Image (cartoon, rainbow, N blue to C red; front, top):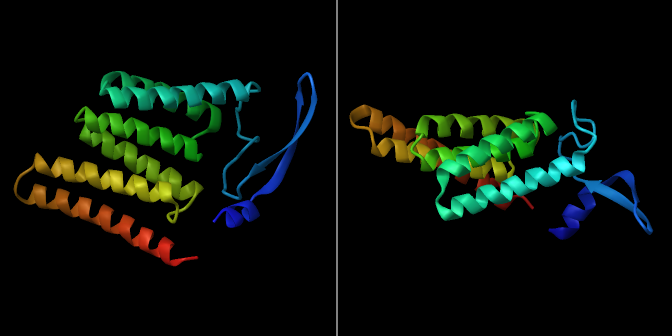
Length: 184
C-alpha cells in the first residue's frame, strides 16, 4: 500500500524556507482534484490559518470527547466558516468540517440539521475525491446513523421511510467498501 501511495505522489512545488539553515523541501501532494496553492481568496498567511484550523479541529474532538456538544457545535461552526473562507467549499477539508458540524448537531438532537450537513459533505466529497473514497463511505454511514436515530422518534409509515433511508445509506456504504476491498 505504501508503494502505491508513494507512486501516486508527485512533486508539486519547491518550497524555500527562510530559516537559520538553508533548507530545500519538495512538497508532495496526491493527484486528488484539490486546489493546493491556487484557491481563490486564499490568504498569504496560509500556514498560520491552516495551523489555526488544525487547532480548531483538535478542540472539536476534545469537546466531543468531554460531551460538550454545545461548545463543540459553536467551534465546528467557526471552523467551517474559516475553512470555507480559506479553502472554499469544494475541498475535502471543508467536507470534514461539515462532518464535525453534523456530529455535534446529531448529539444535540438537531437531526434535520445533521442530515443537511452530512448530505452537503457527501456532495463535496463526491466532487473532490469521488464516491470510492473512504471519507465518502464514512459520511454515508454517519448519515445512515442519523436516519436510523430519527426513525426511532417516528411512527407508522414515517418510521418505515426513515429506516429505509438508513438502510439505503448503509447498503451504499457496504457496497462501496466491498468494491474497494476487491480492487487491488
